[in-house]
Length: 157
Image (cartoon, rainbow, N blue to C red; front, side):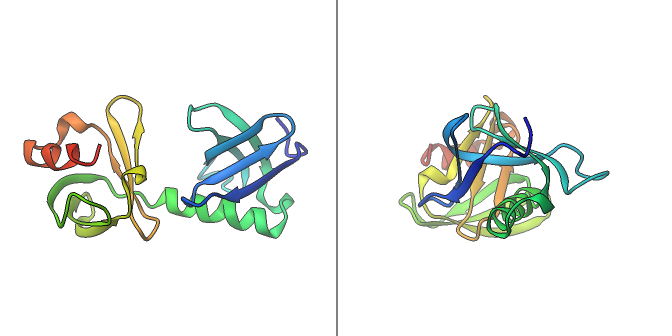
């Protein structure tokens, strides 16, 4: 695909990116993925649908209009800071919004889960948990969590 493909990017009411194009239709929850994050971070960015298919391509960020470029850069920034959630210590409530005390690979912290829709599956084993500040926490493998953490998490899935 080429960056000449005409598409519109916007955010839906849940804050997820929505791509609309005549060629590929409408896709909610698209994710920008850098092809060469170290060597050429501003060139070669795929827009990937929730089912893992590429539905758009950006040759260069600088070729985008300011609004679209800002949306892509914001999404990339939130994806690139992704602490790994290792343990759920406690939750304030099983109703949302809920404050979670967690342990991550970057140390202990707290996150606020706005709604169950902010927990997304990644493959069969993984999850992404989006907090109210837009930070995504990665759970690589549910089976690797301790029993207490899995029990707490099960209440939200």
